[in-house]
Image 1 (cartoon, helix red, strand yellow):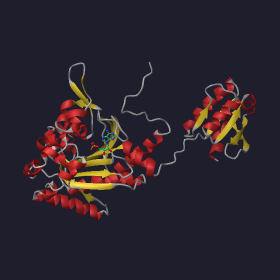
Image 2 (cartoon, protein in one colour):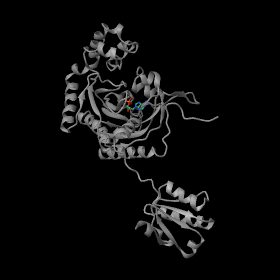
Image 3 (tube, protein in one colour):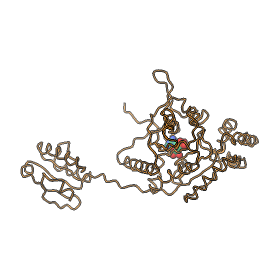
Image 4 (cartoon, helix red, strand yellow):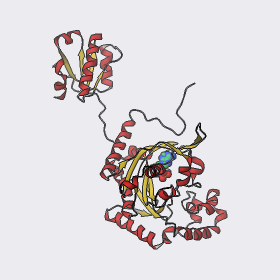
Length: 417
Ligand code: AMP
């Protein structure tokens, strides 16, 4: 029996993992610059946390969650997204009581049982941020700027920022009624999926990918044209702030996103370098969610971005960081004494921060030189009985082929020069 990784999951192997590290380091640097603090939460939670926050009727909760009973018969779920867990922790640890505004970020795996395809996995990774405690549109705009700065720093230029407002508990219900009414006349001709949504989640009919649905709903009223004065003011301030920071965006009145908790701002960043799964990141404001999860009334806003999709775009268009994975020195050894000396000397040099490799397989000198070449070591030395006795060896520059005498007791100086 040969075991295989599960469909929709991926191993990140050496060679690829360096790109992940580069992206993760960039994310952390940008988050620090914007003054977000990292939070790490467990990958599984009580099922109710997600049902309550994301919404029972969403695709994620109704058909994509990895839910299981543990041995004490409690229903648990592998997190399908990061916001619910971050907010659960925020409430549980009374973080809001320590300061009125909290800015958090996370990076980690998420789990959804979707149909795997390019850019869509069952275990995927997101980085994201949450700002809790302020209703200011500045934070809505800041979320977009954080995500965009990560892309910019990675050299990614092909992206579009789409924004919309999905209203609030005051203006959305009357708008929903108007929308349902407008959908009645075309209802029978909509796709089965959209038909099912008309009564329960009519806003989601608007972002149906089905072309026929799109043309049938071309003239239905949009939320952005039915906002209450407060939401309208908020939406226009977000736009002003984006303009003030020279951030281009488009208003997409059909953008609603697949999570129920958004209020006011919703946004998405897409890339033309991706195929049908073109969303790089999405987010929005969720002013009712903390309370919904049992906390004090606390406005909040956040975003989440896919790591795999970002890496796909990076591979196509971005600037990959050339990572130096080459050992500075490969110590080639002739006998057991030399191997023992090399082992100790390697630790000594590594302790000083120099990347050193030795032979662990008692290979011939020729085979070790081949290995040093394969690893593109910058220097090699060959050490045996003679070298150990004279405390001197030849340090060979693998690029030029030239070599020079070095003192075995002071390799560090020779390597550094
Ligand atoms: P969401 O949490 O659905 O708003 O998704 C935010 C971002 O996470 C998306 O824009 C994608 O970049 C990424 N994402 C969501 N679902 C998946 C998935 N199944 N596989 C890979 N990336 C995903």
